[in-house]
Length: 250
Ligand code: PHB
Picture 1 (cartoon, rainbow, N blue to C red):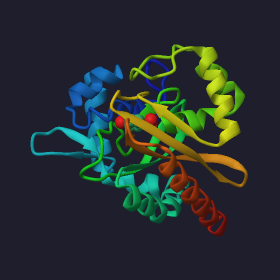
Picture 2: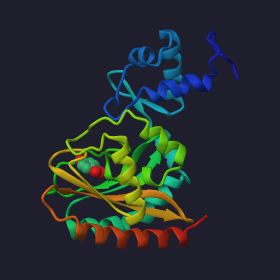
Picture 3: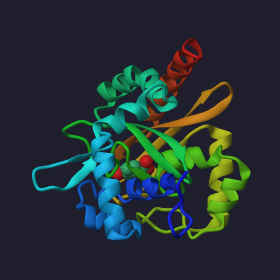
């Protein structure tokens, strides 16, 4: 692989280009990309041109680029995320129809909760989650489920902080968080009041595949709503999703 003068491989530079795209930064010029990726302008323009030709990036009329549909297609093909989403979707729809609140599916990805799916309802409470968006493990209900069952090294890394406050109810004290994680493993559920936003409560349960927690299923409720009916629904859905995962195990 041809390396740049800095010793960086072509793949590392391409990854740096793709990494400049974020949930809030979906369209950029090649110059912006170069600046954010720390690449010389000529290099950035050349890489962007090549990625556009390959369909990994798409260019609009104003010559700005976004992530390409081809990248989405390749990423989903045969992915474990897609298998999980497909197993979960009918059961998420049932939960959502019953509760008429946001229903979400998240997995652990590099020390954060990454959301694979979100079903909403027009009358549901405010919700900051987005599909392909991320939330901190210690702050979101899904993240807390995933953190409680993560390998100990990851758990210690998160517990070492910083544990930033996202909402007024976010657990920012490491000892309190450690206690909460023990309790989550014991009860198999999370009720996170005001952890992301003052107005809402996140409730979440784990989903297991081959004995390992692979995802969290959650609902965002208005703060004043009793979480118990949602937890009952979520636990039933989680069992059904686990049965579907057993049935479709590759
Ligand atoms: C949660 O998972 O706890 C959560 C997520 C998004 C919100 C509120 C709560 O807007």
